[in-house]
Image (cartoon, rainbow, N blue to C red; front, side):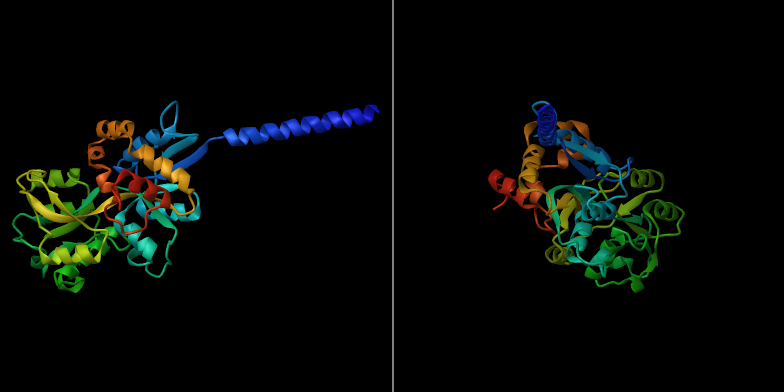
Length: 327
């Protein structure tokens, strides 16, 4: 009889322990990592602001959610991490996201990342075509026969540069192509060894500002029917303008841009992404973005559904329809 009582008592304890484990599991936080970029870039601090805003602490954020911004090597690394399951979400240029989802561009022959979905378009990353002031380059067509850096193979910039050249009837063989990162390209331009180079990023960028002050530059417009054709053919591009005096002695320059985007996997639950998107666009997050970073003011609800090169996540789509910014 004593043995039976002991067994019943042990059984009851096991049952209580199991119930306790179940309760603890139900209360445990959900983790939502945001792959960003290098700590010196723009992605990382913006990711930190968003992660802090959506984390459910006190009466703010998504209840039970712990979001963190994780430094990374940028767009491709973030998409690979999302695909592999080591990140729940991440930032990417809109062109890289499009190429990944469609299996083209940088992802040619590597297969499609068909589960890639958009949470929000954040802010523009402008295509700068920087020229030496005395190089007499007034349009993209004037690059013919010139020494032009289009960035390194494997970069997003080189694919964009080739698209821009092609729109104006040029190919790599029509220019004296160099394959340099923007930093070394700027130094070569200052020394007179280069006529122009492509750079993709938010303005103003420090290296171009310094070059404009020390050596003088011109920005080549990317506009006209050629640009309009690119915009209709490649949905990840948008019209953009670099305002006058963004760089010393450089007037207002029309160009095009890709977008910084926040992407995730179709495997993430619809309700979770809906709640994250809803918090992303509330008043508290708006105030944090406005105060926290120069690019924060450019992150707006109206822009969130632009540059749609990949499908929206159903949870995000539901919110944008409710908010009236998506039909």
